[in-house]
Length: 506
Image (cartoon, rainbow, N blue to C red; front, side):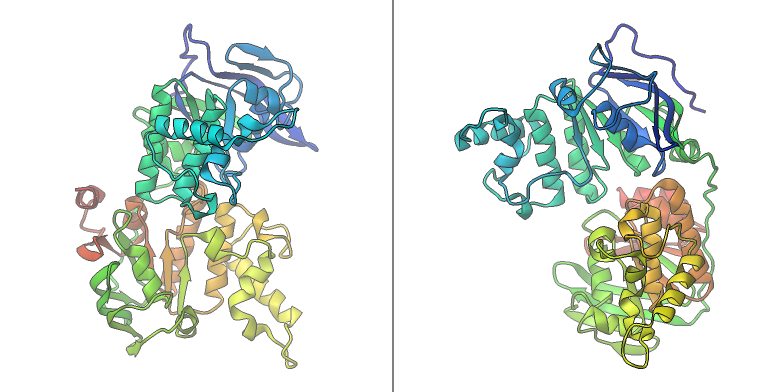
């Protein structure tokens, strides 16, 4: 079992050393006597559930917040009694937040190099200088981007690279990366992790925050674990397992037990025959039965999400059949799919799953407005409140008030709201596409408890996931998809997870 490490730095001057950091907000203790350090060139992970204090400690180190009395902070050997964002940046610290904080209408070059043109004295921005600085940074990172392209035309992965480039233009020596891979595909994630490794080799310290424990253990050498604002310990990742790290983060042991059951005698809800959409998937044959959870896994680009879109009417297959409860269906739109009893929980919760500016209650009832109208065709407050309260209670969603913005919720509770929204349509088939993206490890178990409960109640579930353990432990059958085709099917009761991983990563 991994034990907390003593100070491993020896004579090396840490990039950052914090001791006895406490922070209270109006009587609420967000951090309680936290101490850790990060070495030059180290990739270090901050791990913990949502609300454990990760963002708070980052904001203290970068001068956004001031710690309570008694804290000690050293940045590259300098003891500081007070830190401001300006001081932090001058000392070589940068933060790449999850929302990136870039300028969508500005070019790649302008986003990377604009800070070099800032100052107290107004001056003309020289475009050639901006381009030169941006090009130098991208060359250093080993990537090629169109310097003149407006940022909004780039993929999320490319914007992450722009954000890294901006930090390097400012001569960053310590970079915090907050959930940098949350919206990336597996292949994009691999490219970003390669960039992180390159920064580390050049002596830049990187502090990585991520809910994806596999990549945490892959990229970092040490991990600082926080729980409820307190330091659990600093651990070497060599020999650390995901299950042990989960236990450290949550204080609970999550037993990974195969949940698969034999549903072969249950009525068929979905049957797909020879379904094809050129360039996306080919000759798909699929059956999902009442109360069954069928998992589809494989590498990014296998065509899994594209298949989900076709089954939900978001795209139209070129050929083949979709049969729902024994009747052939042709969806002209996702509205047709909803009316036929199909629900789809997208992997992009923030953009496609929720309406961010709206309240928790409004998000839940959005797909079922017709069912909460009064006799005058207006929304009935009593019907709305009853529907909202019913799903909040059934799914154990932790909220303040139903009228609060949905953005006030944690990732796990936001995902429960997305589930509530679609379950309110009373579907026969529920498609879950990467259901735990951006959800912390403790909340994942709760999501899958709900999934199993829904299956036990007779709901047919098709679950798409690139995390093999997620599919293995929570599905009745696991299908391996690659190159747009189904190439293997496994029963978790008679197959080891290593066999599936060996096939997928072969």
